[in-house]
Length: 91
Image: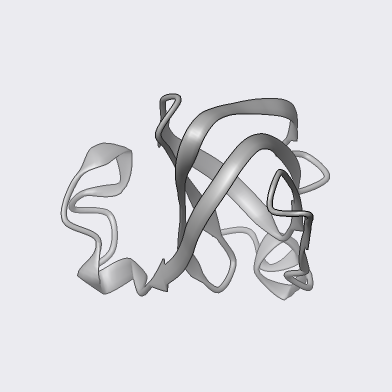
């Protein structure tokens, strides 16, 4: 992985449980209207809720904006990630 992408800070802000902005984003693993799974430089961030959509994604700058009703946020380590695009990349 590129050292510049790893060294970037990861910031997360949530406004009124319906606007999420994050930096330190490396990629989006998968998304639908109930969940968005984002690979960050500090692990996998899962956002769960209703009517979720990605308003902005710039992996070059590492930024994402998500809107919808946000019910739950949680992180997991890359090693614990069980599927998707990154399966087998991180042992």
